[in-house]
Image (cartoon, rainbow, N blue to C red; front, side):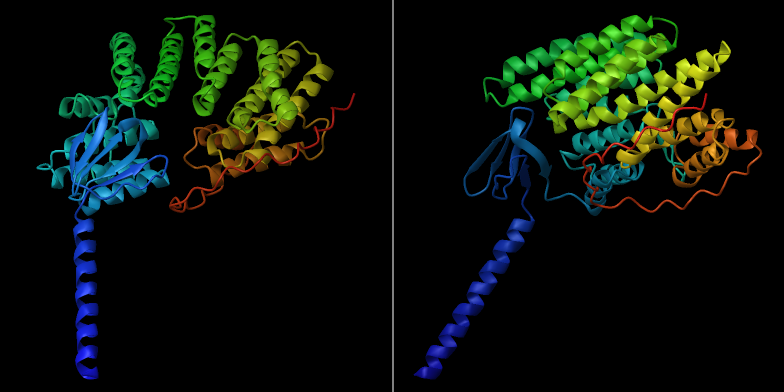
Length: 440
């Protein structure tokens, strides 16, 4: 009797384990909807995926308004697609584009692949700044990101990626030197974002946030287009400043676009040679952070200190040109202090830091006559760029400065692959003491 009961229990346990394994296997073959608010969604089979709702049908209907969707992972994706997402999240955008391309080739029969893979390629190229496309090491050629974005909307006119694509297309076209097309897409985007807002708000008020962000980013795109025109001599820099100022007012809820708008205002002021205006704008941001301690201001600080340094540096050069040595040296010292502030506090922002090292070196070089070790420090700044930031736009200028002072450029450090998890941004360190004033 006891033996029979034991056998029965064993059989029941085996059956339960088999059932659990079958359920697990079924779940592995189902689509996954990941919500931005982390509310769990049961695995399902997706029947609708657009900018209104993602709907799944498996043991009951699942409906998630698209504003709340962070990611959709289809069960029939291949390994290349999973690798592409991983590389994208690591910030290795060109490699992500390669894997998205391979995934598209392997999954051409999948209904969702043309939309998702083309968006993945386009966005990766956009993030890497390859606006005119590029040729990979294996000889594979990539078209400009604008072409991939257009393919997304051809595959699904109501794609969840629509708001993002609408604001990025004008920027892409402007960077391709297609300024008239960019302007036309900008106007079209304004109309379509308004239509998007009117349609989606009927589903859920949460879509308002996406529409607001798209409107803010569209203002950024408008300012970037104006900047591109100014560089081609087709617009004035005061017009660019006004565009960035308008964008800033629309980006108040969104820290990263707001930081870009503030940077844009500062750059325009510098290009206008309004150095006092640039200093006032930069010091306003810095002072607000010191007074309020608002972490939303953190993304603006590297640009503010950089602009402050550039404004002081430009004035130093002007004084030097007029033979005014004392005010020139004072301004070089103040500029160097601002650049060293970037180096000391914002070490996780490579391009800002590389630029700060370059300009700090320029300042040190001009203080050779009053500081015995200034020349050596200038060389250290420029060498550090070559070693640690080999992909930076400041590498070639740094090598040129090293050659000018008769110093060989060092070999670049091997660049380790990006970590899967980015380091969190650190709180700013206490301010470094200002560099000593130049001797009179």
